[in-house]
Image (cartoon, rainbow, N blue to C red; front, side, top):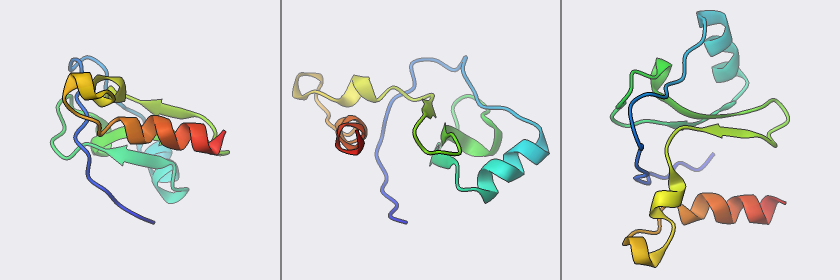
Length: 89
């Protein structure tokens, strides 16, 4: 699995991922954790920033890639997320 580091902003610290230990272990074990915080801004359990469902066709994401997806915004790191979604569809 390829790992790349991209900086994507968080709009606020209100949203954070939490679950019981069994659920966290299952998500980790089944490879459903797909994004993690490097510097966890909101206390999210196990630094989880994004997860997918078991089929891999639904993504839950706290950071805001739309805020870094256009040259007018000065950064393009978030555009890769949207591009990969379009390619997968």
